[in-house]
Length: 202
Ligand code: GRF
Image (cartoon, rainbow, N blue to C red):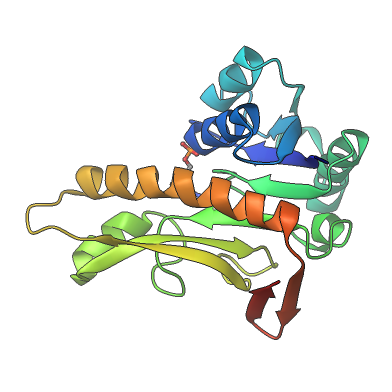
């Protein structure tokens, strides 16, 4: 079976990256990670990529004069790896047209809330503080606006009476790992149509 080539962009821990790598290795996800790119040289995600023998590239924002040239370097690293789909997995920067224009409709992100509720940082804390009874995670196409692109898949997680930010985050994270693998597998195998904000697959 043909395997979709992925670039995964990270900044930190890398647990979603690891889930993707394991899904690719087990055959659950018909894809392969061609390159892992980090803007943070200290990201634990880089060690995880190394363990799996995946090409790693570090591209620091501070090495570039402006955002466009930084994004152009990110896009080149993805293209050199032959990436057909770019997966953001804890990548802590907003991307603009210099990157997104090079991969139209081919950049996805995972966020730990049921969007459009609680975009941005500390989504799990926002959910707890708001008092919602159901939290969750979302995989969406990336647009210039933060956590606002068309939604591809979501999974709900019940909020328990004694949840802390940490306990809720852990249960959401377990679902993130499953949802991200399933969604990449879907995008690798299905025809995807985006009409306005609505995403359908066939
Ligand atoms: C995840 O919660 C993801 O939803 C968010 O950032 C976190 C990254 O965690 N965008 P990890 O680096 O994949 O462990």
